[in-house]
Image 1 (spheres, one colour):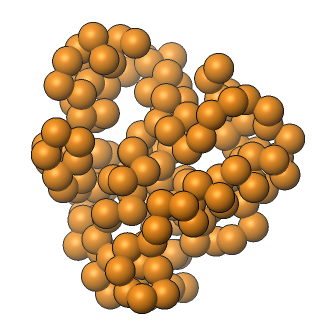
Image 2: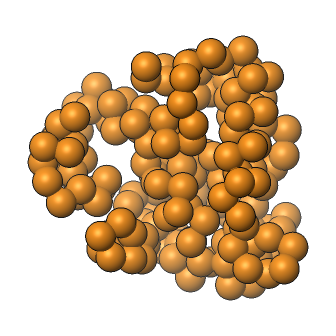
Image 3: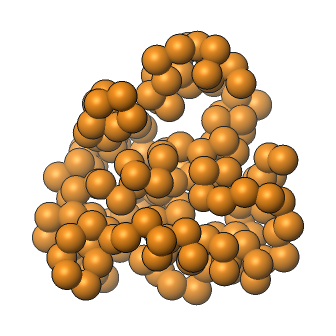
Length: 156
C-alpha cells in the first residue's frame, strides 16, 4: 500500500534525529533508493542549479535529480550542523552510514507516527513517484528522475 503525503509528513515529523530525518527527507524528496542516498557525497549537491547528482545508481547509471528550494535549505542546515567532509551522511568511522541504521530509524519513526502501512524505506521512493505523477509530472520525465531503464518499471 502506498504512503500518503500525510503519512510521509507524519513519519518525517516523528523522526527525532535530525540526521536521519534529513536522510529520509532526501529519500522522499528525490525518490532515491537507500543505496543511493547513503552513497551521496557533499560534492554531489549543486546548490546553484538546485540539482543532486546520483553517481552509479542501480544499473551503474548517473543522473541528476532536482532539489526543491525547501530540500536544498534543509541540506544546507544539515551541512552547517554536521559539517560533513566527503560523505554527506557519514557514520562514526567517516565511511557512509550503514543501511541498517537508517532502516531502523525509519521503522521507529513510522511506529511513533502511527503509520501501519507495510513496507520499508523503499516506500518513500514509491510515494515520491506516485505523488509526482499525481502532480502532473510526465511519465517519461519521471522515468529519467527515477533512473529506470524501462518505462514499464516506471508505470508499475
